[in-house]
Amino acid sequence: MLKKEFEKKYDGVIRDIAIKQKVDMGVATDMLIYEVRVHAGVVKRQDTYIEEVNWKQAKKDLDSITD
Image 1 (cartoon, rainbow, N blue to C red):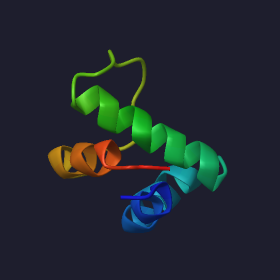
Image 2 (image 1 turned 135 degrees about the vertical axis):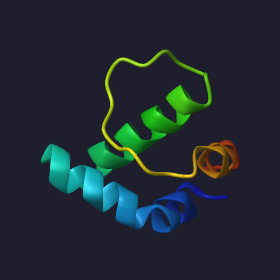
Image 3 (image 1 turned 45 degrees about the vertical axis):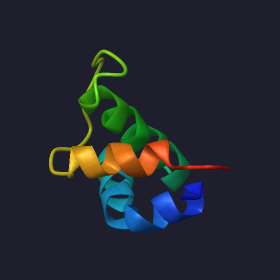
């Protein structure tokens, strides 16, 4: 999966983060990537931004990003 495909797939989640956190879409994308990594146990939680995402699927999608 390309990063653009990941961003397209999770567009609604990214937009929700951007609106709630008052950040641009790039920052919101980074925030989602952080959350996926937290839920996958890759990094320790520092803060939270979103609540409802299929974390297992998001981790698979993130791992498949090739660009």
